[in-house]
Image: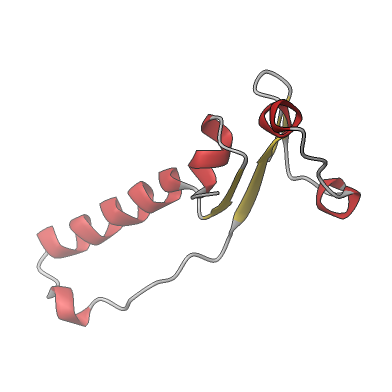
Amino acid sequence: MGTWDFGKAGGLIGYGANSIDFYRHAAIFVDKILEGAKPADIPLEQPTKLELAINLKTAKALGITIPQSLLLKPSKVNPRHGSVL
């Protein structure tokens, strides 16, 4: 188990914010600082969207059955990686 990208990359389960969203927010912060804002004056932001990635291919290889309640409403299904995202 690890971050969201971990499950997408082949790990069994990943949960958290999408790292691409982190990079986008970092660019916004850098832009504000380059425009003259003081880093201490920029409000701290927390992720508002967390995602769960379950790699079904890895689960099958490990002989693990994923409960149906986790598979009911995935945001995306990636058949290439066997992942429920």
